Amino acid sequence: MFNKILLGYDGSPHARKALMVALDLAQKYKAEITAVSIAHVPDFADTRDEVNGALEDAQNFFTKVLEQARELAAQEGITLTTKIVPGHPADKLVRLAEEESYDLIVLGARGLSGIKRFLLGSVSEAVVRLANCPVLIVKEKLRKG
Image (cartoon, rainbow, N blue to C red; front, top):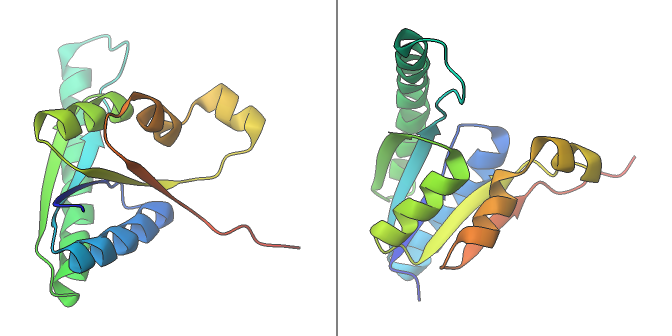
């Protein structure tokens, strides 16, 4: 059913839950899995140095985060390919899925309230709207109390 899985990964607790689900699916379907971290480029940078600095900071952060994800995957006996790419998260994930023929995109969701989602936007919502392949959103279980 799924041969190639693309995981949007930023190292957050929600992304780690999505990683565990993606690893489970990869194991069940004997699928390739790639975790991609998107280095968000500032929309309105004053200088090229500002953009380069943001990209360098993201590269340093995501290198560590993705290494931890590779270690978790290795513990499950799965080889996890990783990438760090610049761009806007939703657009870049959808474009990568199309260009590299992924069968499934897996993402974690923060579960923002309606007003926060409206004000901040939602990467997972945008990916669901734009993707031409199935998208699995792993949500945090709501806690009572």
